[in-house]
Length: 158
Length: 285
Ligand SMILES: Cc1cc2nc3c(=O)[nH]c(=O)nc-3n(C[C@H](O)[C@H](O)[C@H](O)COP(=O)(O)OP(=O)(O)OC[C@H]3O[C@@H](n4cnc5c(N)ncnc54)[C@H](O)[C@@H]3O)c2cc1C
Ligand code: FES
Ligand code: FES
Image 1: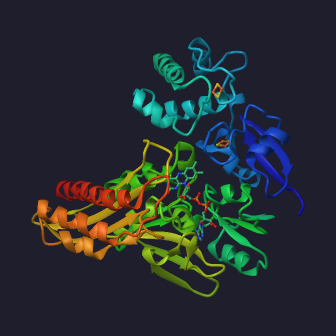
Image 2: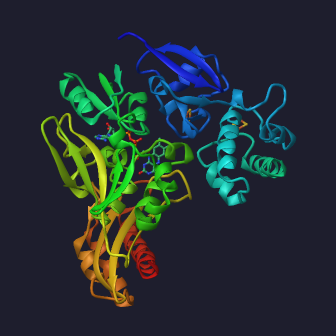
Image 3: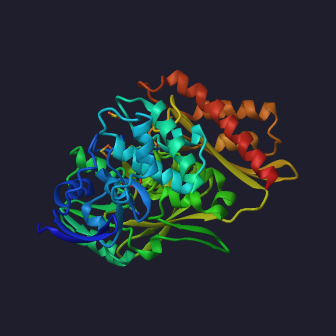
């Protein structure tokens, strides 16, 4: 079966790639577009390490086919910072030491951004529900929740 | 594997009918891709239905609300009118997975995956929902409870696609609710679940539907449980009869999530709680 030509917008740039028809978007982004910020934890929708937004919706890229992305807009962790200026969520993750090994971090950042876009002032409970699709096996969730709260506060000031 | 992304239901049906190997509809892919990845299935053809406009919208007409098969859980949750009209159906669908899963999963995918524990299904059954099934030569409308025939099994013929779910119009004094029991608060499979829809006339339950999940090989519609509360104001005697009817109807399995005894007992408790919420919602409506 021939590969498919997929035309997408990734972090604002028009990107084309050719992928096998059964390849996941996670693999296409990592292996063809070179965006290795998108991580594979489980490959089955449980851990959220592969989180991206697709046409503005938070999804697990391991459960999307590369082919499905044709004509759609993708945002990954690589698009969060503005040049050298980190996104407030990234700043606060560093300040609150909300990461250790870091494999879960891109997914948490994307999921947290999606949450704050929808709800700029979430309660702790709302943050915990909003991030329930992201697993962290070393930092624990407390620091992550605090970092998200702090980033939310800073973002509301603007 | 070949990937197709047709623009119309008719094209999608034709593609599925023509394929000699194994062919699958792709809605949100949150079941299908997991099954592909874990090697349970090796499709020759996958037909993405998310670019078919008839499957993308939520429309209310005189006869009810039509929800396209490609509408995601997140989109349902953002639809204020639907949430007000059918809170039980929306809350059941919104329980599926995480925000990431919500961005993709559909009610029809949940139905066609045919898990005994599928969260939206008891709520749809209680709501008297119908599925619009489109095949090569005909289109039929089928009650949701007729779709699932066993774990992972449906009554859909080869090449048939569900285009939409139709929720009937109902009197304003109606309410529905869905509850699921899981050991944690998110991201788990139901130990038991219950969906109830009812309509009141001067505070008395005029009609009701009760459906249970994860207590048999398929989600169950339990007419005896509905009869236990029809004609009542949901007093304690009615609730007791409701719980007994639910426990009597279930044929659960023993597994790590719960024993037969536990499921049989808890399903009655959940049904009573769901009935109270539905009753309250109907009264407030
Ligand atoms: C991490 C995770 C958590 C989950 N949590 C839950 C949960 O809490 N509760 C729950 O009930 N489920 C859960 N699921 C299962 C799954 O998300 C749901 O069953 C979901 O509703 C499936 O919808 P989908 O659109 O993604 O289906 P798909 O994967 O696209 O399709 C599922 C099946 O239905 C068929 N199909 C889809 N659409 C049609 C159609 N229109 N016509 C005919 N056939 C069709 C497909 O061919 C496939 O066989 C979870 C899954 C994951 C990965
Ligand atoms: S890799 Fe996609 S959810 Fe774990
Ligand atoms: S920092 Fe290691 S898994 Fe979260």
